[in-house]
Length: 305
Figure 1 (cartoon, rainbow, N blue to C red):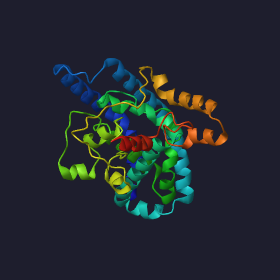
Figure 2: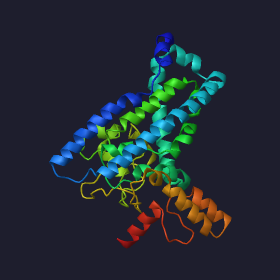
Figure 3: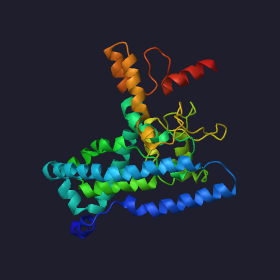
Figure 4: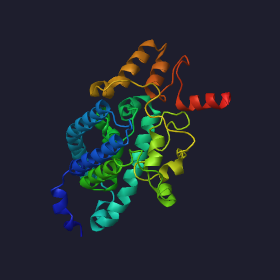
């Protein structure tokens, strides 16, 4: 049965590349609607910065994905535990992989908000103070150099490398459309199971109430299961950006600014333990309490209510 899929996989092309024209079309439609309604959700310099980050990530991903494929293939050939079963039942394999890939994305994404060194690579995706489809393209560059490490367990289980890389691309394509303010809440069953624009607006908020919530890729069920879910509250309008906005449209600065902040904090750290915490504690941790983590800010807010 697996032989049916071999020609497709041999001619594999990154699905994201084929999706780019559709991304451009949908962004154009959304931008036109914003223009007609005289809203300021699209700022040309901001969108161009996001597009520049997206193009850079596509180029870098050619390199990093090729490296990942080689490693995945070696693990699959030498250690793939269930590969024979997955070869016999490829459709079941795709179905199982869908959930395992999404779970992997959830934990990688969640830890990227809870470990500062990982946050330094991820923060650029949250750095825009606007929320529209072009924001989806504001992808990390440095994250690509370690992202695939999180997926190493999948070829060890026996999933073929091209299946894994295809599903990763499908997840990325899905997450494009949820970066919009144009779509309100969807039917409750959809909102309960899937990541939606409403859920992802919460994720991109810098409001204390919303910080570090809704880390889902495709399925919001992981946030519900692991305690990081929060529904969008109509009485708490979302404020987009990061807690300290960087006010730049330079893609290089967007990609690297938090690494510079870490370097400066390491220089002022009073001891080795503090240096480690500036690297691996949640973003906002400080040895002198001058800056706070998301949980600390929520605690302070509760005390003052």
